[in-house]
Image 1 (cartoon, rainbow, N blue to C red):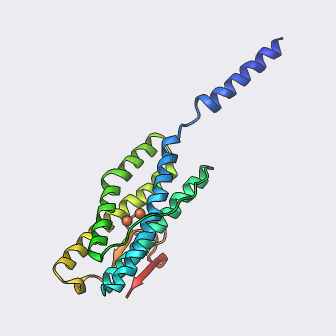
Image 2: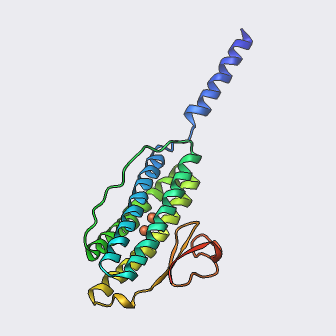
Image 3: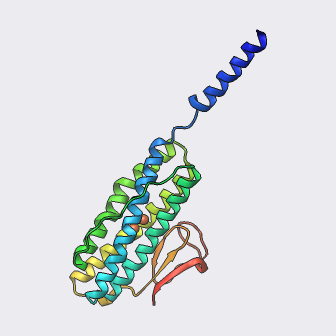
Length: 206
Ligand SMILES: [Fe+2]
Ligand SMILES: [Fe+2]
């Protein structure tokens, strides 16, 4: 009888530790999934926008979209790795977007980046902190910091295109393979977001 009650106590403690005190990561898991869809869609969209810019004769804007497309695919890959680490499967989905004129595509890209900077990633980061999902925190922060760079690059492209000065835009970009950080022209010796050495950057344009 005595050993039976001890057994009950052990089972109860086990149940409490597993179910009672188990970390609730539900919201962060949903946020990672939303971020995977967002980043995968952005990557596919920017690749299509790059093609459209090429067709319209905006070679330099095409390179910008190409570099940003790679950066978004790095974000998606990072987010997927975090989800996998948490032992959660990702549902199938199909990226949906519309290709318009390069001017409209740039404005759409600027809007997308602005939403991610102002709303999406700050909320996701706050939640990941609350639920202490450290890998999600790292992955969200990599994307958040990069989108700020993208927003500035798109803003500049919109202004130059409006002023009919597409030719004054950078013709080369370097993208960090770790975090997607995007530099116009040469990257520094180490990435300003993830400290990755420049040798591990991918170059777009020349
Ligand atoms: Fe991104
Ligand atoms: Fe971006």
